Length: 307
Image (spheres, rainbow, N blue to C red):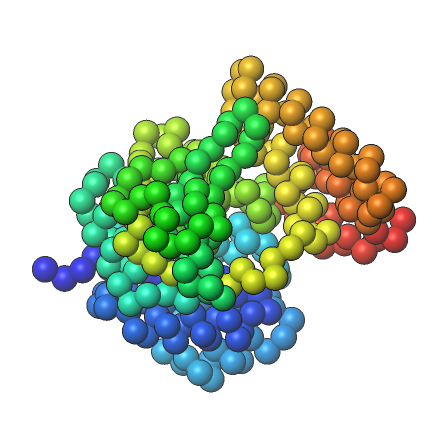
């Protein structure tokens, strides 16, 4: 029997070098029924020209403006749906894949019709024995999404068989198209960051399963990851947004109170030791409470920092 047709969606923004390396690794996959769709998020560099020259056979869509992660992925979902795939795979462009990664994911989904999505074991590319994501656990009252086994050695992984998970990271998610259409695509209020947690929660609210398949292995370029004003802005604003959309009743109140207390203390401390972070976090809070969602002021942080 032929493998189910799958479209791989890859979002690029000024990351042609990483995207090319990921595409080269995809050439080695043992899966034999897929196509690749690149969504270039209006990169201001020559990314699109690079892809057209190196991979003329790959479908490329260049957006009219930077739609953010959520808007870019949604554009990918809409374009991919035109090909009527059974599955759609969202894959970060800064990853390298093992040849059997997609086969393992599809096999897990084929074995469980109640599953709407599946993800795999993600290791650090700079140290391929170190786990970055090895299953997901939610602590709802704190609004925290924890990468299980993060930082542990590969041999210390907690799960070696397919299991259900609380959430999947947007770094790599295989979606069953029919179920995703029922639950809805990415929530563009987020623009970027924490949107994958919200989508995971929404899928589970619909009664569908999320699977973690440790036999599906990729490597993520996480060396040098650190906090930045851009990441801080969306993380703070979207943490409240996530709680509002994901939780109800007393859990929503407790989670909001907890995070507001923590971020208020950090803003106070940053006012003395990191004025940039203090200003950005205050702007993020203001934008959440004023319903300035989507892109918000994330693309104009220099104006905030300079005030």
